[in-house]
Length: 149
Image (cartoon, rainbow, N blue to C red; front, side, top):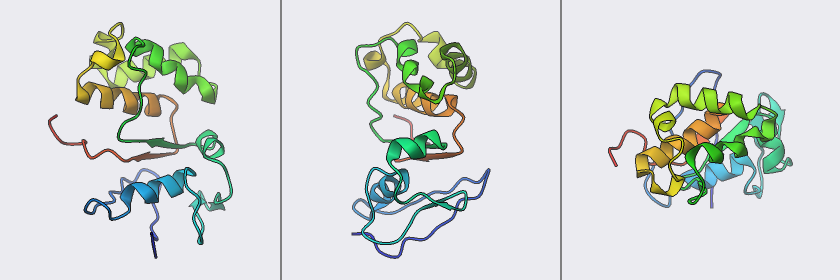
């Protein structure tokens, strides 16, 4: 159960939510993204209350959650997994261009089956998909950032 969680992230700011396993980090981000409903309290995004909005509505408003296991299609080619990022209306070619510009290694692996990428490359793939839609707020539950897996 989460209690008394209160934080604000300003434009351009990076905010790290740290704590031991079971402290509620992932739960907090799931509440923020709309995957879980809070029993009380509210979630504000850009000053607007989004507490009652569904996760997909929040995503269309620019909030993107990249979970630890972002569920890349294990059998699809790396480049094909970016089709998911076109829901926002961004053309597929533009999604690919943005992704491979930020993560050139993925461009080298574009024809490789996503499930055969290394763990770090799979995390790059998840982050590249999220960044390709130019989110206003990006949340990640990954504990891998900065680690050498």
